[in-house]
Length: 324
Image (cartoon, rainbow, N blue to C red; front, side, top):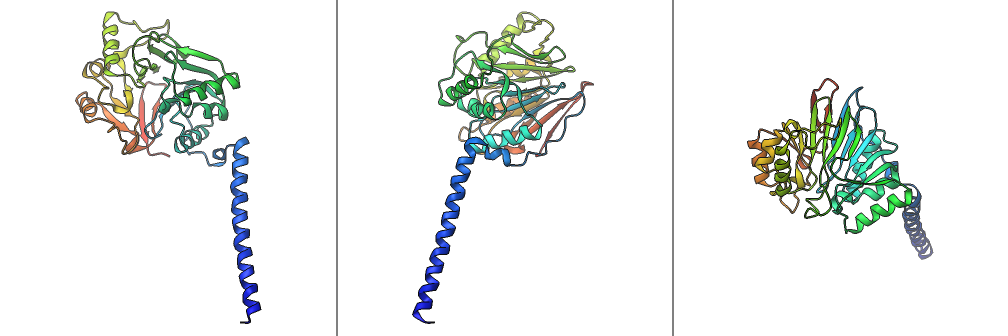
């Protein structure tokens, strides 16, 4: 080949490589600019969760790594989101695609149980994407940047912000959540001041324990022994001794699920939200041993992925996993 042809071929090759690099750079810049106004995740397909049956209430314990997010679908179609993951791309992506799979256009109630970033990290983004009719903030204010982002987003969007403490209710007397702890913001550590929710529908009850320790569990046992119905709020009945489903505290920490607490609750199902191979060793062998001793069937998000409990209007329920 003549030298002129060789030079021409080299020039063409350089131009093609340059064009490819410029196209890739343009695409990245376009995605970055596009993501400012429209979430890239909004373009991803929704998860095929399946439709809720008539008269059903569903509890979805999402697999968001070493973080927390529980989505409650009430029978009337309203949605309660309890905590919002840690704000990582993986966590946000899963929560948003899951909510899209449920057909959520606007969140009814968003509860942040406390200010740790593994519980409130994705709250600001969720509000920006879906909004919320009301937002419940913990009594013990968080100090993390993620918590401040959450408060700023709620204020900017004009979401009503309400403190969630004992006797606060969400839903109506036929299907509801009642906050049974804390009583105030001056009761101890931030973990022990996190909101604990008792859920009830058709005689089936669930307890979401956030990050409380065994000390708070024992305090709840002591208070419950004082009087039946001590946690009731009018028609909103709370019977801890009739708990069927327990979302155990603090990702299965060794400081959770003490024997006295499990003896009072007598749950049949225990759900553990934790990340695979997490550095904390959650769930701890001690906690798992106590759950086994209490006769609980244990469902772990690190092993099973998302866990869904469906409660029918006839008072029966089932547990599903691996459906997404």
